[in-house]
Length: 579
Image (cartoon, rainbow, N blue to C red):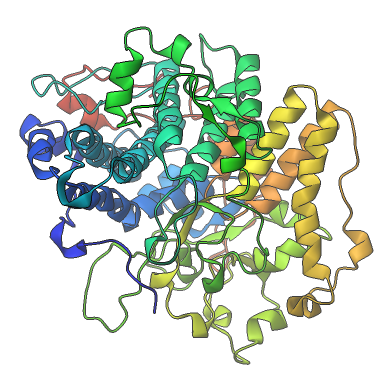
C-alpha cells in the first residue's frame, strides 16, 4: 500500500469555500493565516491543503473536461446530450454553465490557500524547533509554483483575470480583471522566484509528491512558450524575446548552462520598485545571496531524465525521474475513510465509459489514432475493441473488457491492472520531462537551431523505440517492425515545427492538455472544423454529433467569466467579448 506522505492530514480542513465566499473579506483566511502559520509544522499544513485541493474531484475533473474532452483528441458521450456538459462541448453554453463556474472557483480557492502560505512564510521563526531557512524556502517555493499553476489554468481558460496577491487589502476584495499581459507577467514572476528557493533535487521515498526545482523550470518554459505563441494575444510582449527566454531556461535546465540569480529573475527589468534586500527577505534567501550569485546548471541538469514509456503510467512508474509535477493519491481501500481527496483522476477516462450516469466518457478520435501509425506508444496510450494480450497478462478477461468502447477506442494511460489496486491510488501526472524537452525543441527551432531541435525530438523517439527492443518483455505485444519507426530527419523550419508538434500530440495524448495546446497555436477554429467533419454517429444511440459546428472564431478561444462572479462584483469584473 502506498504511504501517505502529507503530514498531519486530519488537522487541516477538507472543505472548500465557494468562490462567492472567496470575495467576502471575513472568509479569506489571510488574517487567520498570519496567526495559524507561525511555525514550519503549520506552514506545511497550509501547503498540504493546496495539494489536497489538487487531489479533489472538482479540480481534476475540470482538467479532463477543459484539457481533453473539449479537444480534437476525443469524443464524449455527452456530445449528443442537451445537459450542461453537452452544451459545453458543443459551444452552446451560457455564462451560467456549472462547469465553467467550478473551474473558476477551484483555481481561485487554490490561489487563496497558496496566498496564506506565501504571506506567512517570511514570518516563521526558523530558529524554533530546529527549523532551517532552507525548509521554509522550499515550502514557500512550492506555494509560489502552485499559485502560478492556478493562474496559468485561469488565464488559459478565461483570458485576463483578477490578480489576488497575498498582501491584498481586506477592505478591497473585489479587484478588477488584469490584462492578459499582466497575468502572464505575474505567473512568470512567481515561477522565477520559485526557481531560486525550491529544492535542487527530487523528493523521494516518504517525501515524494512535493515539487522540486524541475517542476518550476518545466512550467516556466511552458508559460514562456505560451507567451510566444500566436494564439495568445498579448499586446506589449516581444514574442521573439519570449522564444529566446524559453531557450535560455531550457539551456539551463536541460543542457546545464549556468545562470545568475539576476538572469533567472530578470531582476533589473522586473523589480523597479523593490530592492534586492527586500526581495531576499521576502524569499527567505541565504544572507550571502546577491544578484550575481551563480546558479550552476550542473545542479539541475541531472535531476530529471526519460524513463521507460511502458512503465511511467503504471504503479511502478509513480514519482519516476521523468515526473516534474505529480499529485500523490492515496488508496483508502478498506480504511473506512470516505473523502474525495483521492479521486481517481485518470481512471475516470476508463471507468466513466461504462454506464450512463458519469459526467464524462471520452474516447479517442480516429484523427488521434491515425497519428500513431507505426508508433509503439499506441499500445500504452489508446486501444480498441480487440484487446491486446498485454492487457490479458493477469487474466483472460481483463478489466478493460468491462467498458463500453463507444466509438471503438479508449484511453489507457491510467488503466489499472488488478494487481495494482484501485484507481483511487493512481497518481495524477501534471507535467513530465518529455514535455520540457519538446518545449525546448520548439524554442530551439523558433530561434534558428532546427538541427538541435530535431535531436531533442529524436531523444524522445529513441526512448519509444526501446519498446520494440527484444529485451523488453512488452515488445512481444507490439507487431510494428523496428525498421518502420524511424528518427525524424533534419529539415527546414516549417517541417521541423510540424514534426515537433506531432511528436508532442502523440507523447502527451490523454494527459489533459490538448485543448490548450491547439488554442495557443491559434488553430482552434481549424481543428474544430475537422472535428465536425469527422464526427461519427454516437453508439449505441445512433444520435448525430455536431461538435465543432457551433464554434465561433474570435469568441470561443476563451470561455466566459462566470455570471455569478460578475454579479457578486457588481460589474467591477467585466465579461469577455462575445458573451
